Length: 143
Image (cartoon, rainbow, N blue to C red; front, top):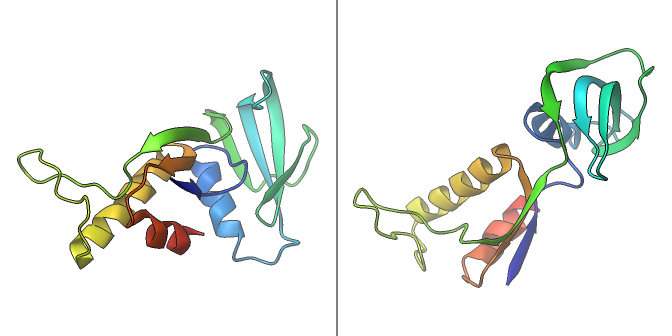
């Protein structure tokens, strides 16, 4: 089994993109994100607060943090999801038949990368893929 860890505790939608983009910045870069509704991953719903990110890590929740770099008050923000059973390297042809299991072609590589990106942008930051040998190079490329 191969486990993919796309990002640490990351927040869905735009925050995922922001947090991933932050990894290329200096580790000391601080970003403040204003949110209206935040599911904190511990069973709590926080309202009208701000998420503080330094580098690629969420370091705090502070309703008074300033200046606000991103305003996500029109969205609900939550931790990334986990899917414990995926076939990330599979793809399907125009007839809906599996066309990617065991493939090693450049097209299959692009399909697998597209599947990983679609999974991430859907809010899943961690997935476990069940046993295809093509999973390993994809995992290594992501990490």
